[in-house]
Picture 1 (cartoon, one colour):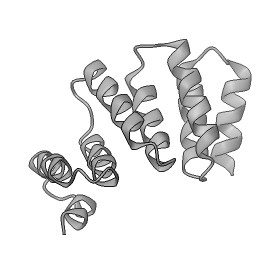
Picture 2 (cartoon, one colour; picture 1 turned 60 degrees about the horizontal axis):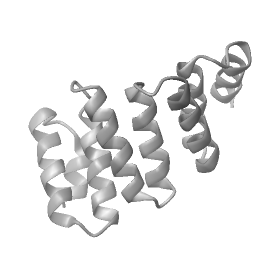
Picture 3 (cartoon, one colour; picture 1 turned 60 degrees about the vertical axis):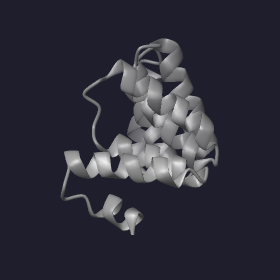
Length: 128
């Protein structure tokens, strides 16, 4: 609740800051308000179309909304904008591929993540 309040205050103080909308998108995403997360992520991207983190959080919200094909598009855009993307993005791409029934693609992405971060338990569990 406190994170949501702080992120909302950030948007109120400077609604033109894509990071503020990104933060609010995260609080909405992890409190299962997916439509709100999508709206905030889209707002961040409108403010800065080259905001890689905005595209990635939009992808996560789309994935959790059951819109995996769109999520993959957002993830791809985020990776294009930031070639040094965090390895967890590979996990989310794998989840979306898995949700779409593309199991070989999901396994490939999970193996890429394990190559970058060998201690990830979550990706190992999904491989099982």
